Image 1 (cartoon, rainbow, N blue to C red):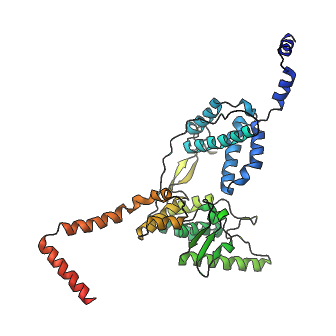
Image 2 (cartoon, rainbow, N blue to C red):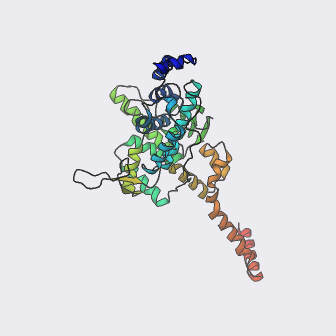
Image 3 (cartoon, one colour):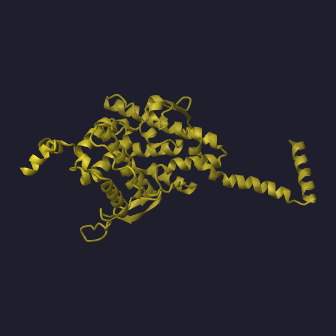
Length: 363
């Protein structure tokens, strides 16, 4: 009572401050507002990914804490635990990025004055591009042909045939395709660069889509329903949002990966009922690597970097520049041709010139 009187004498309102503290928003409430106001602005796949981060990582750790109580050390410790215990340094970085955005919004909402996620030292990320070779592409294509789920398998086929982004393929509607002229027009709202992107389709891509559309029409007629506007509809009628299970399955069948131990949150092996360590198949290639492989095939076919950028929908030259090293082999072959000519003896040059003149005369 004396302490409270002293606070009042100093001009403070201890009862009001305690009431405000009790009513202060929690991280759970921050997530609820974030999910209502900010999350819907993102692509469906990004929404699902962030939702998983909140539900599996952030809320179990901070959910009951007040937004104003979270410190820089709290966020830094979470980042460190995800990195070291879960063994996922990139996921640790993404989690901090999500928290940083959420706390920026909390500042705008007047829930706190600073951002505890700012200044957290991120893990270094190595950009890795994996390119499928011809044998791997053939094995993957065969595995897709044999797969029991044609919708998700066909989605991966279209990724391979177009080099498009996963979200562009899964969210595609039939009205985007001019199958008669072999053109896919992606509206600006459908692309990462938020610009309309018109892409010519190859013969095999058109054939795949024609067969899929015919099958969809026949199915709808047999069921007495209207065909879905989506090229890859899910069970609920909305577009597919995830094809990871199919990807793992076809990679296993194609031999693109290996069995690895299943680890718990503390990094320890998970055991089955017999006490044996559980394993799971982990592909050694990502779905996004299909896009990189598409670019590498274009390079081998003689396409230029600007053309590759147009095909992939890049708006920044430096984005396409990552494929510049793929030109080393064709450039080296060209250089070898010049080198071989320069180092010829005069007699060899005369003979080659005479042969070239004879070829020109015959043509």
